[in-house]
Amino acid sequence: MAFEITQDLLSNVAQYIESKNNAALNQLFKEIHHADIAEILDELPFEEAVYIIRLLDSETTSEVLMDVDDDVREKILEQLTAKEIAEEIDELDTDDAADVISELSDKRKKAVMQEIEDEEHAKEIVELLRYSENSAGGLMAKELVKVNENWTISRCEKEMRVQAEEVTRVHSIYVIDDSGKLKGRLSLKDLLMASTKATIAEVYIPKVDFVNVTDEAEDVANIMRKYDLEAIPVVDELGVLVGRITIDDIVDVIKEEADKDYQLAAGITQDVEADDTIWELTRARLPWLFLGLLGGVGAASIMGFFEDAMVDNAILFMFTPLIAAMAGNVGVQSSAIIVQGLANDDVKGSIGNRLLKEISLAMVNGLALAILLFFFIFITEQDIKVATAISISLFVVIIVAGLIGTFIPLFLDKRGIDPAIATGPFITTSNDIFGILIYFGIAKMIIGF
Image 1: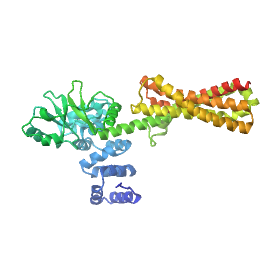
Image 2: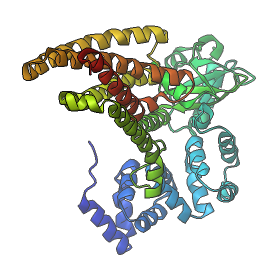
Image 3: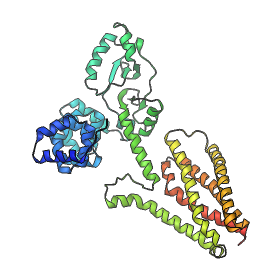
Image 4: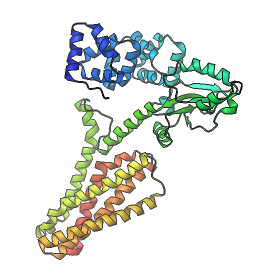
């Protein structure tokens, strides 16, 4: 059942804080999931959020900090001492701890690392900080359960109990050799069914999916999605098992990629949020708005060449917005399908085959729409030349727009550029210009102005 954060609840929290009724606050938050506590903190004034963070025990606080809004967490960390942050870090898995540490300035980072009591934990965090945040190494946690292939089942069970104390959730048991290289995985059922005197080498499963520390986060997400994995082991260049990535981290990656692609599709070039400053939002939006302005000027200039024709054939002017709109719509539809397919790794085959398919699709759609438009214009205007010119123009524009919407994201992807950039103003603007040019060019040939 979903937890509902009401105004009454927020009012009660504020009253407890004002009256310093810590017992009531502790009792309240003891019954609430840490994700819901984080949502409450996002709704509270900043000073009250900091008060609650300092009130909660370290284990709860560490979990809450990972769920609050990034901007709120950054402000909260600024209010905490290095020792207070280190206490929260001690309670976090290494991947989450590294994420928090990476948000601090170099000076604060060093001070916090010196305050961490668990030296092994601190070393593992430092190791993770060496990797790019968009790589498998930057996503992975060091906590996992691993067993040596030469151990007996009896020893394996003892070692697993010790290791499991440090792991929040055991998704898989990994098998390594004496040099630490990943050999396979161990089924819990096989472990329970085997003789205690048997060795792990006799029962483990050699087939196991894994990723390298240098693999891109998006590639890791695609692998885990494809094979429905809850966790995946990470190896270094020598094949040594160094960590694991769990599904919760991949969900964050997928969300971030979706947010970025959505913003690019809307013509926003930087990762921004609604609460960012006007200057940050302006820098993110203005480049594409400027492109749209250039596109509009370009379309207006093309129409200027046919100014005399529009005086004598005013009906052409009436259908100009329709042609431009259809070109933009078809282009965005085509590019959106391709970008989605590229993101999910579903686009197979050559660019030529994909373009041929899009031509066929555009011809079917274009023909249906052109026929409808022809009869509408012919009935209302009683001019077969005008009806033919506008209908053929629409047909050709739809085909060209479909090809542009398909080719550009495929081309960008081949060049290593995010194809999501092709689903927004870029496609719309280019198709507007080509659409207007094609429209008046065909109209001139048929009507003869």
